[in-house]
Length: 117
Length: 110
Image 1 (tube, helix red, strand yellow):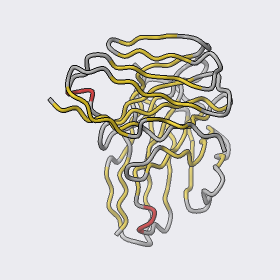
Image 2 (cartoon, chains in turn brown, orange):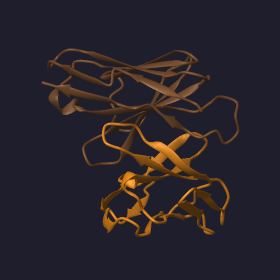
Image 3 (cartoon, rainbow over the protein chains, first blue to last red):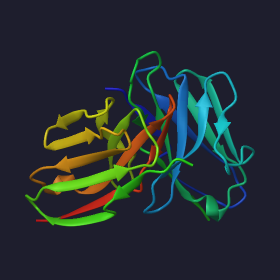
């Protein structure tokens, strides 16, 4: 079945540094990928929609300059957390749907646990 | 914004018992999905529902898309230890975006 790979699975960084998270669709093409954030014991909250070849669409309250999204190819989207602070510590999860398939379900990556010290 | 109200928030059951959880919304959705998430991992799709009234099974799991298109339930029959995890309902907003329920944390006593 469709696989979405996310890397790294865990990252610890110092406050003020930037961290890049990759999301790859391994065996399908995805014109659109989605980035979610999940705080402990909470649900997934959509941060932004990543569109191949164009600008990402951010949800209300999500700073586009802080969470930079690049979707340079049909199989790769990246999320860069810039100038990270401890409150950015969270579980970040990407998802993707196979392009061109009606009712294709969203497949999720295994998430990236970001800890900012 | 769009919200899904999922209940119960947590369940503590004995192995072998059946489980039932549901999601409701004040809005109409055209697709309902149920996911399971285990600690430190991303959600895994269990069942997808595309038509009002649809009842779909996946092994011991059964889910239904409510006839009003505002609700869905998930049942797990004869629970086993590996059923432990957090179950999320989700509904498709427009063509692409998913909105999630708050999750139901399932704990099973052997």
